[in-house]
Length: 241
Image: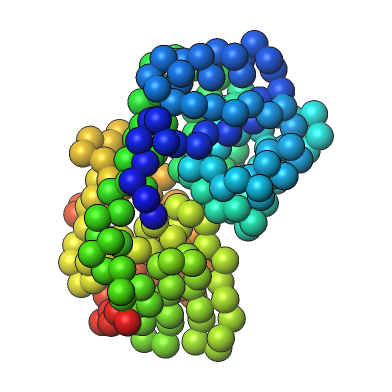
């Protein structure tokens, strides 16, 4: 993963309302970000296949398909950071969006400065992984138990040889845990943020989703253990090749 700054970040904005799309792009442009606007889900998926984006801002109410489908297909075919920006404010939609791999969820109407801050925050999370990856460039295969994780391809291989699909957010979380095994990591460390809202449960949703993919019993986890009041601990010996 390369270091991302405002000038080099590739941001796609999926929004069918041209006025809102203009507000999003203009707000980000004021801070040096470059955006490309598309108005349908299929346009975004086709564009992402040609050029891998660093971040996609996705509306859920689209003329051709549901935005949740877009998030799912993005993570299946062109994994990248995703920020959902929508008028849907239900808890079910928030949880489902995070379950599908979105990094953040903002409800309309929105404050442009908050949007910019959230975009910066998401890109910083991915940027912080770069120094550690560069230092271990020659060692990109992690083995723990009978599992195997390829950090370059974000590919997780199960003990029976099946390749498990991971979203960009899930792969980033697993990488952080693998780089610091048998250490308690706070929710702030796992999210890459100093101060997070105490009601922000996004990291807990990601941990739950990653446990399922690692076949780690959520009621009695052996790999990703919850340390109540402190954070999470990856309880396994990890070797890098």
